[in-house]
Length: 541
Ligand code: VG1
Ligand code: CO
Image 1: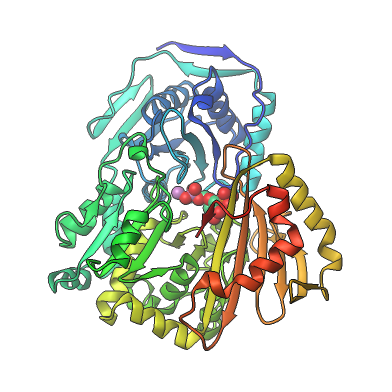
Image 2: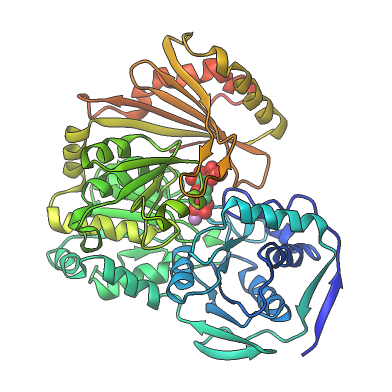
């Protein structure tokens, strides 16, 4: 078959962010845009000659076209084999699993995760390394460097490969192995959890709703929750993946998963509710009448981990991203294990998991995972909760009360200001940065600042350094605010303000009420309203 060498020029702005390269779908469809980036991945990792890769995506608009391009470019550069999910579909956790289980050299995930899809939505491409995890910064830097010097890319001239049925076919000398996207992942879940106990729970009349938000987890959730574990048919809703996610925003939080929230807070709530995002790595947990904050969720999983077969001997350590609440730290302290604090983004957990220093990890953005993979895993978190509930036999609400009575409660919320003028957001952050040295000791809207710094991270395993990972300010009495700019958005800038306060005794307050003093102090310090020209956040989670 003929290989074309196409001359091209560098395209500005192909810098991978928190999780791969994300742009408007139409940007990815511009001439050479996708091809330049894929060739830069090959160049950044030292080529794909003789290598085996995994390929799949969340099914959003352009997923099928992009997959064909990746296959033709892998073949043109001499890859030996690509393992592809049927119809080029794989959830992010399932892709991570395949990379590991099959001992491959890495994989390409086509997804912009929780960002909306469709012709006017977003698209994304991410490279994961042989450990199954998102490429570390050393690799994404090498890829970005390659995008700045690229002059040609290689692609095979060929018809589309049939990806609709499992089996092997070839493209030139390269073998394409199409696999069922769910099978290996479902088998892994069965190894981790006590499926019998969860099946008994459902058999006893326990009810749940899983909202797949028309994204990738529908088929996974149906196969596992309904078919294997016996949840009532129809427990999984919006189960059919759609290229535009049904016009929705596949981000599992109380705003975008509002129908699920309304059900769970209403008179006909089932026992348990959950949702996942575009690519299946996030999770939202809701009990009857109670929303579980992601920061609390990972703390509850850690505190109850030994109830799950895989973790019955305990945890070696835990890790959370810096802006995630410190609820997990309290559990770690009680368990007597280390709690690592990393920058935002799953790629920073990889070394800790590989080195066996951490077993469980979590982020405030609805990401939870463990050393079973190197990605966060939405359905895994849901099964973890179900396993705990099956053993402890109490409603989510009582479980949370019990948890807070033991550890105290970290009241927590994140306020997002979206699509802010990029320059305004930048100057807000640089002004904040300039204030850092003089903030400690001052009083801001009645709260005394005890500490202020810009977070940087030195990886304890390989010594790599990540600078400028957000500004954090701590207050007397345990309050904290963190300021960060998002690295996954595609228009303007998104300012994230992470708010936290702690109480040992009052456990049932409204988080927004309890956080009022911290919110006021945050505005006094950063002049958020003035700078963003907004009088309230766009999204509160
Ligand atoms: C956001 C979240 C971060 C998460 C990342 C990828 O990044 O804050 O915690 O790891 O999305 O999640 P940022 O830079 O926008 O704050 V996913 O599910 O979109 O891959
Ligand atoms: Co995601």
